[in-house]
Image (tube, rainbow, N blue to C red; front, side, top):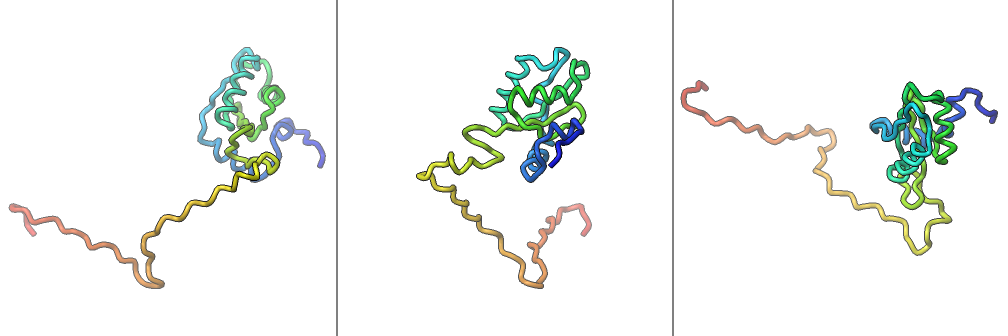
Length: 154
């Protein structure tokens, strides 16, 4: 497959179900790190690495006064932290880095799983409420009438 020439497409991780799930989950997140007028400094890189370790998926906001453009900033952060870029939307980017011990979005590789550790069992389904009969009407509980009070007409 030829290399993308568009800087936005070049920076993004490959498309697929994982990226789609990350973008959906990242929609509701607030930016945890902001890149300011000094650009990508070692302190910013350290904050991004700590946030990725804690959350695995973070939003980073790039200020308008940064020395690099947004694609240069995302390239610097991606190279410095080893994170994948799930989305760039305006001056906000969504970064993802798989947690080394407890990944939330990707399962552990088979080589890292222990043979003694069985796969987690699915929880039993909770009992459901009785279903409607096939073709029959749904039966709602009877409505309660308000008690008669004096001074009111019926």
